[in-house]
Length: 276
Ligand SMILES: [Zn+2]
Image (cartoon, rainbow, N blue to C red; front, side, top):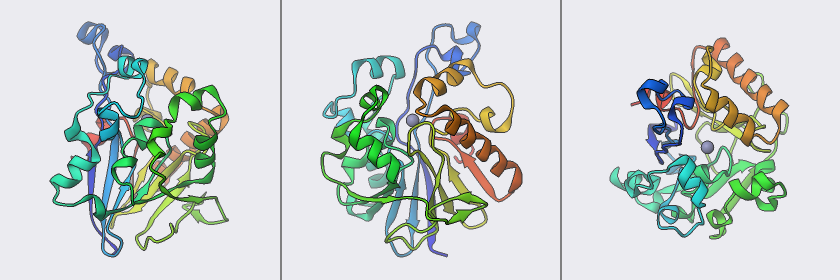
C-alpha cells in the first residue's frame, strides 16, 4: 500500500450569479441570489513520495491580486478569496510544510485549477502534453481568458505526458507518473480544454476518479435534468464539443460498469459533501 491517507479539500468557494440557473434553489427560494460551487482538490499522503496534490484551486497570489484575476470573473463567478481556503493554508493546518508537497497533478490549467501552483514552487507538475501546449500558446480567445501566465511565472518543473497505448478500465490512460510510486494516473478526458484529463487514484478499496471540469453537475453522470446554467456554461467554455460529449459518455459508462469507482467533478458541492 503506497498511499497512506487521502484528504478532500475545497480550495475555492465560488458564488456565481443566477443561482437558480445552477440548481442552487428554485427561483422563489433564491431569486437573483448567487449559487454555490467548490473547487474540489485531493491531497494524497504517500509512503515514499511525500504529498501529492490533485488540482490546486485558487492560491495566495490570486487572493493578493498578483495574478490578474479579471473583474468580470470576480463579478460573475464570485470567488470568496478566503486565504484559509487555499491548499497552502489547509496543508499547513494539517501540520505539513510547502516542501512536503512534491507533486501536483493537474486536470487542466484553467485559472481555478492552477491558481495554487505558485504556492508550491518546487513541486513537479504532472499534466497532459496537449493541455500544457494549449496553455503555453493560448491561441484561442477563450484560452487567453482562462489561462493566466502568472500561475506559471515561477517556472514549474513540468512533467508532460501523451497516451502511449496504456489503458485503465479499457480507456486510454497514463498510469505511471514520473517519480511517483503511488498508483496515481491521468485519464484523458478532452473537450472542456484541449488536454483536459481526469486523475485516477488507487485509494485502497476503491479508485477515486477526479473528473475535473469534464462535467459540472452530478446529474450529468447519474441521469436527470442538469440545471440550465451548467449546461449553458459547459457549452460556452468547451474547446471541442464532440470530445467533451465523448468524455461525459465514457465517465457515465465507467460509473455504471464498475462498483469500485468513486467519481466526482471539481465544482459540485453535492459530490464534495459525500466525502466529508
Ligand atoms: Zn473549473
